[in-house]
Image (cartoon, rainbow, N blue to C red; front, top):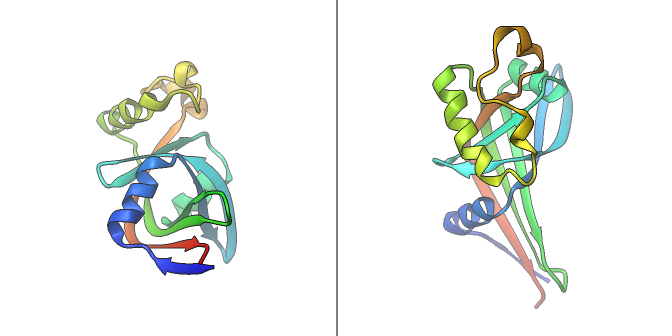
Length: 145
């Protein structure tokens, strides 16, 4: 098996093509990893979540990482690791922009039940929109010899 470093353009092509990543975050020296769906647009990752552990962790420590991979036949694979920064989108215009980006791929998150902007009484159940910006990115590819 031959493993090589992927150039930035190949890393960006992989993350633009995929939709599933593993998000790593940490709080009080306790790591946490969870799969998330995302859309890569405007050079950042857009995603959403309901309130919970990953949001609590990222609000406390916005330094996160993402792992995106693609497996092929014959032990071929590509993997990209991103160190990044979490930003919660709280302004109406930001949430609307995220909604417009995310709703393009509505087959994986059943967005019909959500609204981009929720009224105050339902805010506890409103989706939390966020971005992850790239601070550092590396990628590798494995191919049979």
